Image: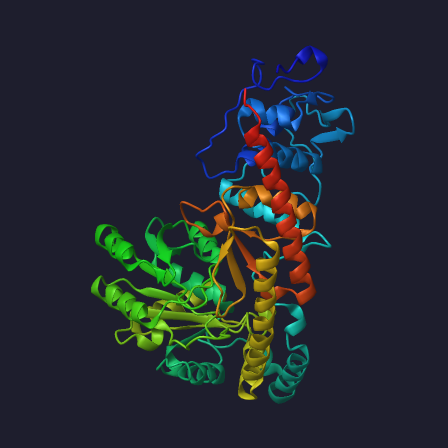
Length: 510
């Protein structure tokens, strides 16, 4: 088959003015590379308005790639206004920059990915799920319908009536004294032995993590994380211009043999782990590995940053103490908060650290924002003291378990044969590995959005070497009917694309 320019169909491969190549081994999905190259040709004027592009099947055959990659590329380019499709006639260039240096206008619902890195382009692409009507399993937030708004109203009114203008002033950098004491009492029930003077109140757990990075790690230095790991930590790493080394995990958490090898050879500044209901995998590190991890950190004098924000989200299984509860040498810095379980928008988190680490953290916190808002601190303290936290946690866990069970049943019913997941004993997420005889998670995403379902693409959780077939589904954020329908749409879309793959594989390539 020949693509004939004289018939109005551009030859993207033999024209001397059109040059691009696809990196099949790179992290950037093939369809995103295709989008980027076609945009470049349109923006430069090489492909003028009205040019008819090859049919998706023909272009896929010439490039020896999946037709789905071309279909997804064309679909996004149409959504951004670069292309237009006419039934029975084909796909045409709809924009003509004429070589202008000004970028073309884009749809307000579409991301600008012109200069994005592969990781950033995937994140921008996931913003497509924010459109109305989409069942989006991507975000990490708890459901708003479970938030205790009535208790919050009572708490704020009570605090203002009690404290007046004091509630609106600055607090000590370390935090509101009674809240620090309440946090000490709260974590004591988890097995952590500390004093109120070891507690630093922060603006959410995310700030707690960032403060530790700023206090302990300098620009250009390296920390070790699990792979995959929390995307928010990856954001901090990139923003603070430090390096991250992902260490492989198994069903019990970070591989200690791989970790030790890295500690010996590279001496990183920090180990970051989420040992309980890890985000994104839902994994729980067993007690014996927790002890071994602490021993390893002590041996190589490398502090551990423990992210315990999901620690209390337990539905079943044994209750395992946090790393900090096992720490006898002060090597562990414990970070958690009340955002996921109580009030995300109030932004109250905390750090528990010892000695020198604590003093450095306070200095960084003071430089960052002087103190966490006093009204928010006093409100959370009021709710803790009156048992609202315990009531909320019990209620939420009961509902999250129900939603998890519905998600597991829906996954078994609707997701394709060969899909893999492990039943989470707590947390909010189902970590899924798709069959490798179909579309990647990124390729599936655009088609899934078109039928009204979104998710977190697994690649964005890896510091290096991502698994292109993984996705994270937040079952906790949706009501049962939405979970059922979302999984149904996702499974149906995968099967449709897999059928296209099978058809392409049967077709002879040029």
